[in-house]
Image 1 (spheres, rainbow, N blue to C red):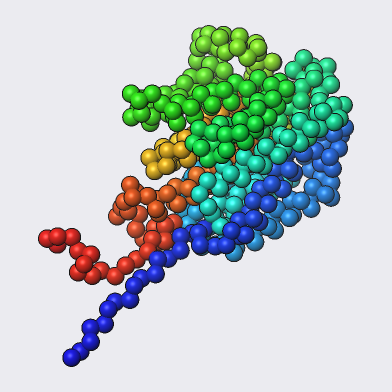
Image 2 (cartoon, rainbow, N blue to C red):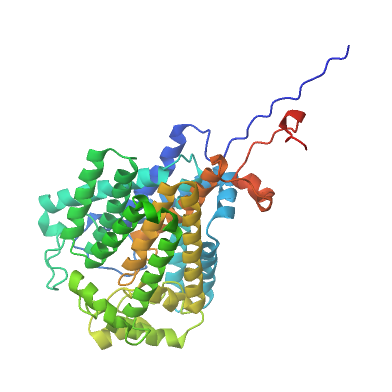
Length: 476
């Protein structure tokens, strides 16, 4: 009698970023910590040093950036299959923006500075892609970021107590008098770190991911730094994002099904606020009156409207493609178009204090379109993640809404000298990775026909089983 041979059991393929030893995640996390340090702490820990030319750099900081480049490149090459799957699922307009910034070297008014910024852009992306692809575990983004940010805030608070002469602003400007900057380069940097940390720990408290005592203690630390740095922009945007994340995670019973519409409502509200701030629609600035009363800022946003006026004049000269990636703000040099700030305003602001205008100024309306498309895709991915894992999606959406408001009076979008850009590059690729992870294991995410093919194999690596009669549906 011929023996019937049973088909071999299929071994499930390992999902990207899983099945590795826990130690595999230490290197990308260490690179993130190093990058946050080099982006926020003055070069050589010299707090008396004035701002230098963008082309300057000491040997120590150059060495740190080389370490980040080599470490990120090593992890990307080692996990190239996982990286391919991650890039296939990543925010496409973000990648288009990187391509546009690279091409702007051809028409940049300061090619040497644009090249240097592009190289830093590549390093930041390499480290963030490595973090999101190598040795991934659930909730890794928020777990690592919470302790990195809290460590920087704790060091800043201790530094303010230990050496207030170096850790606290003593300039004569009203906005800077006795404002904390801690171990960072300025009060706005400390405000950004504190705002993101507050949202992350509030999210951990509401979801139960962190201990209650640890969450409350770290929220108190972040709140202290927010108040003492006197950054009204960070304070307002953090309060808005905190309300948003509470509303998403603790909504009234009758509003649970309206969450996607509420996200859209918040997006429209931020858009109207942006139009009012930039005075694009005449008469709309009246809605800013209660906001200025709460934050203490006048309707000129501490003189920022004058900066925006000069920026708009410069944008009109090169509306389509701009003047090159980060080639405008190179310092108060007579050879730069930004020297108009000195002749017209009698001071040099170092940035446009509006992330949206700075993007259009550098890369024209094409760059602005890429930025808008990036927002749309990010919101869609955040809502998709909310359907699979509500807590994860709420966190990523709260962070982007905080940035929406912060960039009305600060420049962070695709600004490689800003720590907020690092946070959102990390969030962009971590969001794509989290979506892949949830779609692999979620019973609500049924595979579709369009998801098949090489992208599906790279992104999901779902186990394949042989078809047997036991697997057929009744009546098939």
